[in-house]
Length: 132
Image 1 (cartoon, one colour):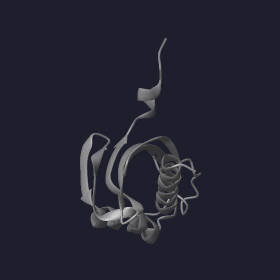
Image 2 (cartoon, helix red, strand yellow):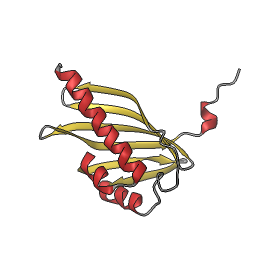
Image 3 (cartoon, rainbow, N blue to C red):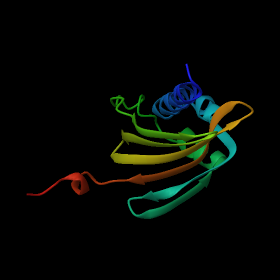
């Protein structure tokens, strides 16, 4: 395998772990994919959202997980772009009553890919409807 393929496989594995961590509410899985100083920001229903990794994990800890609520797993990778030791991933996480999209920045730290920044937004289903 070439270096790009190796990196793409590794980034996809981090994203898979991220999805499982969110879906199951597994703080250890999530902690394993986030850099300790990562920032989480964006908006939820138009309201600003900004947290440190620890603050974000506290939110996850204090809510029921999608798995606990018997929701279907529908999270997926939309795109990954890798340049050297940095990557950007666009992912879709429909869960609860939200239609989340994330842009995740990743970098290699000591040979391991980690999320260093998470941008999130909730996109209303209506904004995806195309009218004729």
